[in-house]
Image 1: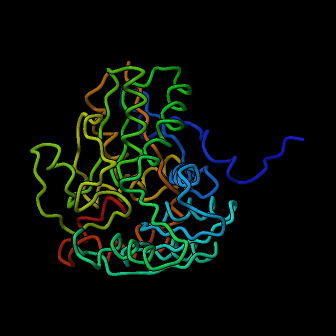
Image 2 (image 1 turned 90 degrees about the vertical axis):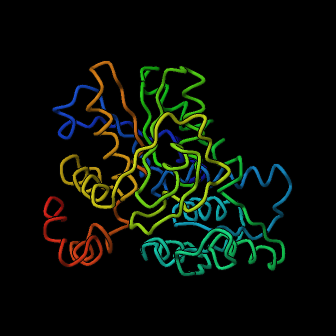
Length: 335
């Protein structure tokens, strides 16, 4: 019988889907790697397994132990699936910016979820990462697994995402476009692809308000500003962000991100989250300057079901996207 031993065997080997309608006036091939096909519905399922198995290999997690992590939701879900199968308990710290769909999903999986206010600077003790570290330090038999600096994060993409893209495109991929959050997806995948072909270009999509573009372009970290897209961008530079593998960083507004995500949903049937919209908007801009020999691959990071109360909700867009004076013009292309 063709039977999987657990849901963890379903992680990875996600399909590539050709973008047709939204690419019909563009010369390159545009291919979406549909990561919501993972059992937890996002690309972060890949690192959930990797982070836990690395902790096991290093002997820092014991049977019946507790995994603590700061998450915008998807890494928590990936960790929860792996931890459930392996017999660990789990606690996640999230900010109040994160969609309730994600926190409710984690609670349904049996997680303890702690919500803190968004907007604290990285060195503030109330920053959600620092809260998670404190909880781990004060909880018996617990570890803070730390997706932001743990090398097992990019290593998961070096071992799986990159090789899959190379194999699925028969080595013809010329451009990889992804966002930067922890840095794991783009750094690990880019490292593999550039080892295979140093001519592969890697472009990072970064929300306006995040610090990555200014740091990449000018080597300085200016102050961050609030933005609505979840799970990507930062107000500091995580250790897993390896700029040596990145060729360009492109800023994208919330409006352009949500517009692109909705267009993928309405015209290609790819029901995705806002971070995918940030990436896809960048893909379209990059494709405009390329010829028919280019093959662009981008990840569909997660499912739009995680954002039904946010940008997939027209009322939320009207309330949040722009000021009352500007919203009718600004969202006219989205709604």
